[in-house]
Image (cartoon, rainbow, N blue to C red; front, top):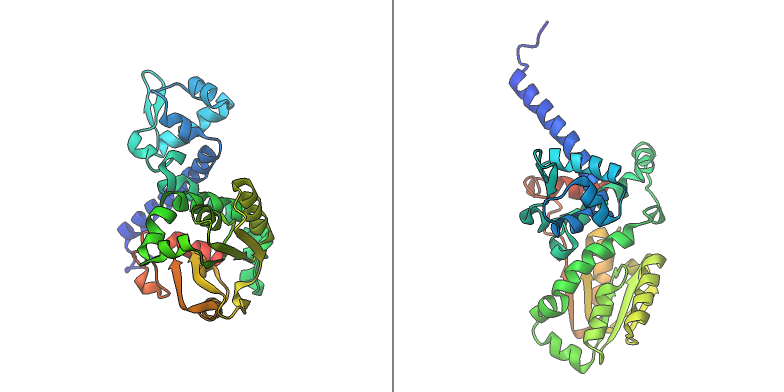
Length: 304
């Protein structure tokens, strides 16, 4: 017997939404591949081209490129001319999909989806048994975060973000002690150390892989005033050591954020400054209901 309360139109609309999610998830996976093999970057610089021409320009297998282009066309990412059998990436789309877009490149952010998907079985087990997935299981986390945050820091850290703090740039030029908490691969530390050679910079992170990357970059850039160490920043225990402490998109990743913030407060000298950059969101679900990245943020929070 049919449920008299059953809303057929609502059910059909939801089924349509589910099909959209399935298609969008598929397009997202293909866009990650396009980013990693440079297809978007190449397409942005080409006139309308055939799959053979695009494959030649990217030095990729044409059969795979053609199938990828099919996903991009049906996903409304790439334009297609059936008469000429040519493909074109509109400049308005390239502005959000290429490395030239810098921090506006959303194709780079899409890589977070397959990253967490690789540990999915461990998350399923955690749902059933509690616990979590080891940090080391996210093998490409630091590489991905370095790509994303590096684009932001290159575009804005020294010229825009640091000058927001009154007199900070002058202090950095004179020489102060600086700590970056949760430094990841250390790119922000090395940028600041290069720009302000009279100051002394330290980067702490839980990941040995990230710290090794920071040290290698410091050597390549020739910045002897940058040092890195593996450390759990929830146990900072360095009273009055620093004039300036930064935390770039790292506090929300902490298992014990209150302990981290307390340690930062204690580690600052009396006239010191703490600069924290983080996601503009809330701890309360109702305040995130219409957040443009709400589903993505809760997914990453659950799976990382």
